[in-house]
Length: 143
Image 1 (cartoon, rainbow, N blue to C red):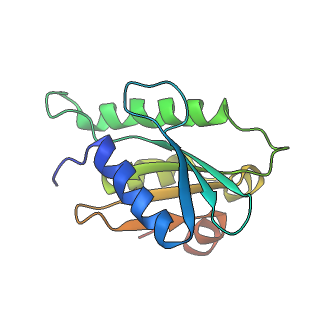
Image 2 (image 1 turned 90 degrees about the vertical axis):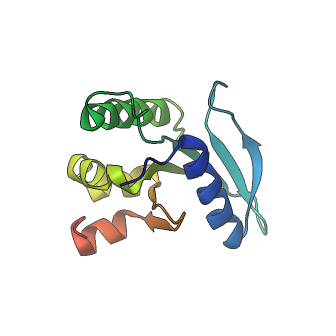
């Protein structure tokens, strides 16, 4: 499996969201502080805040451990930014190499529903899979 960078994941998610009527309001580079992607629905004032992670550097000895650290980091970053009173949607975006790890760790679809969290997975061809709590309930995270 080919390594997918954070920028590649970010760009694929931006293209995907753009096709669904979301427009960027703020996009951070890898070295900037804050939510990686903030978009606004074109027809009304709904916002989407998304944390993005790429695959670990090929120099990382344990790719699995590298993904685990990045997953936990992204979850913590997102949780510290959630304000349930503002009506925003939130998201976590990863290469598909994270899929099994993420779906194995986020076993409570009701939590994703309550916090309005979407999961985005980007494959090598930059196709984006958007999962919500409904998808996890119906599929039990298996694919």
